[in-house]
Length: 261
Image (cartoon, rainbow, N blue to C red; front, side, top):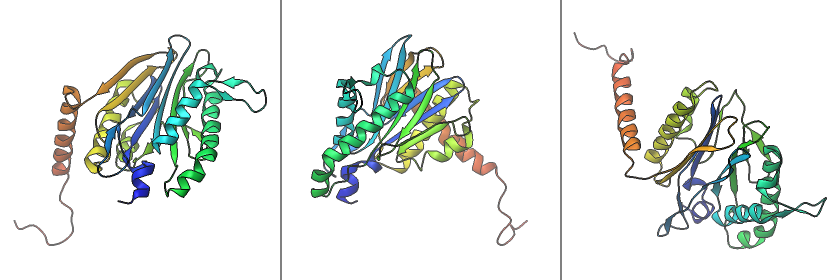
């Protein structure tokens, strides 16, 4: 594994957001590293909440110095280039405006840090998942790319992922629809995370979970799931058992020599 990959963290993170009719699920691991001998735990899912007014969740992937810089800037205030006023994430009147603030801040941070990171041979790549609801507005979920541009989740594709997403994506592709019940979406997100952790040791416990129900502007779950969590252990065991039973139940392929009678 190259130093480039270790420093930018793209292969050391998995975060997913699932937006269904009933609400929003945000899930992230906490493992990060800056070298084979420096593996640490850092929170990658951050929540902002004023119940009844707004609830927002921001998941981060990529270069840790870049994501932490962006996170601090949007909380302390970013100057609006037109009005010259400081704008904070939680002051934004809509989720779109908040996503735009994150993207703009990311571009500014990239411009400031790029020369020094490039000189050190380190990638500054970073990305974010941003979801939530402002009172009187829609529940929304965005993925913000390293360049600061972003896309929005839709009922046709009711989930977004950042980081090491390829191992968990098939689970969500096959099972999640916009009509999926909210806590079934939680379960599928956890299965997706378990599939990722089994295939990539760079993604690991503990996990951070946030759940909000549509039009409540509040989180009904903010949970850290560690290695002692009984439900997650049971889910892992049941999923492994179900996969084994499923492949055994499928008929033998009709290729090659026929089975002897």
